[in-house]
Length: 226
Image (cartoon, rainbow, N blue to C red; front, side):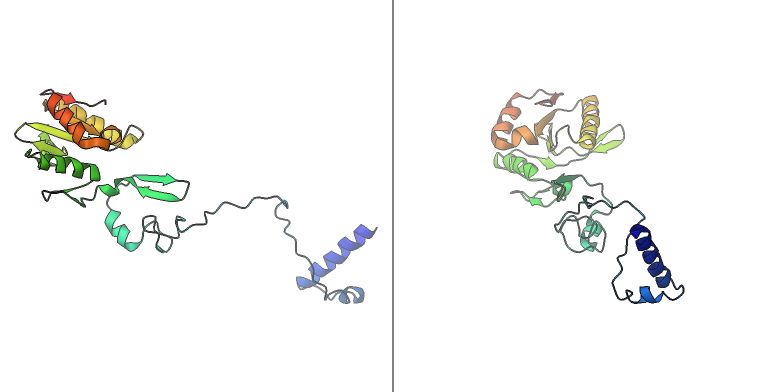
């Protein structure tokens, strides 16, 4: 019986708040009491988990994913939008918060001892090695195969040898697909290619190039699977 009275009283308060008739005298005496508001649209759950929102400056949608400055809800600030708007980017995301643009190095910002401007630190080391050892070389000299133009990293005209430095392993699908396509074209052309690899060769690039320049085979793809 008490339960029914409580429901009736709550119904009268809601009726009044919605613009209904005046409350009964008994109810008016209690109108100054704050009436709780319940949300019956979904089941209440005290243990309901709130959605996870990263609490750091790299939260995508609020800040530029490159520099972290305010971007008004866009992925890039105006400066980096103009820099990357016509490019396909490869991103490395760590711990759901740290973002690295993997092809950031492909911007031609590394200056070598001979003045060449290359696109990665490893390419700079290779170029510096060639320069120090007085080996004539050209950077990204155009190579046309079946009407398509390629740009191997280095060409050594006196040796008629090309060098390609492979920066990523097979975990990068798009990079590997492009790499395999280029290798088949190079093999078809019959060029002499020396391959170097970021993961295995850059710890001591000088020793690596000493060895490979002494033991390569002409007209073949050398050291591809190292």
